[in-house]
Image 1 (cartoon, rainbow, N blue to C red):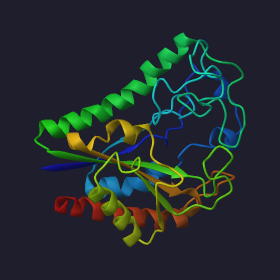
Image 2 (spheres, rainbow, N blue to C red):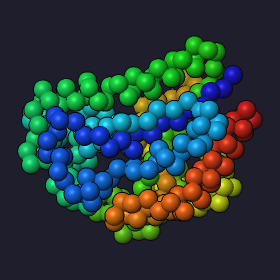
Image 3 (cartoon, one colour):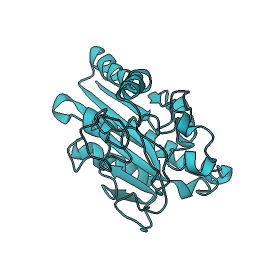
Length: 265
């Protein structure tokens, strides 16, 4: 038996009272790095295929669910052993990928720990719980697709500043987070759906794929990034409904193919 599920860790937009520096920011800043609308793009697919999934509720600038609790520096948390500037876009974002400062001063270690407990751990408990659930039901292999979006061009905060990106970027930590067969299936499925796919550039994968992708334990995790220009105005952050509808159908085609052909791996 094989199982398949999705996570969407960066679509959350809620900002809690504990992070007042994020309140009142212009939408162009506060939504700069959110994977806005990715949950909506995948929702018809999740419903049609009745796929297990976990969606983020909280904003990634509060706690980035695709990071680790130790991905902090002295700019973000007082008393951090990591020097200032090491993790500007770490667990707690201190600036956007466009360089806009978010945190006027580092938070206390107590607040850092509280944010982990309240907003980081619940999501990851759900992810661990799904793996345990499927294995408890007899699944020998669990396949996990981690869904994201990306700017259409690399910014100063990326590995590819100024470069125009592919429509889809598939990442597997250079072959470490899943089998070659699963990676090839995912790339083929999105390509067949009519999308141009790149592999491991400019993204290698995040902490979700790195943490849960353990092929030797029957856990195969892969990251899929969608180019935001395919469905939204990147400056206003507004959805472009007609484009989004077309893209959502392509996503449905790709994920349907993945689910149907997993049995052949």
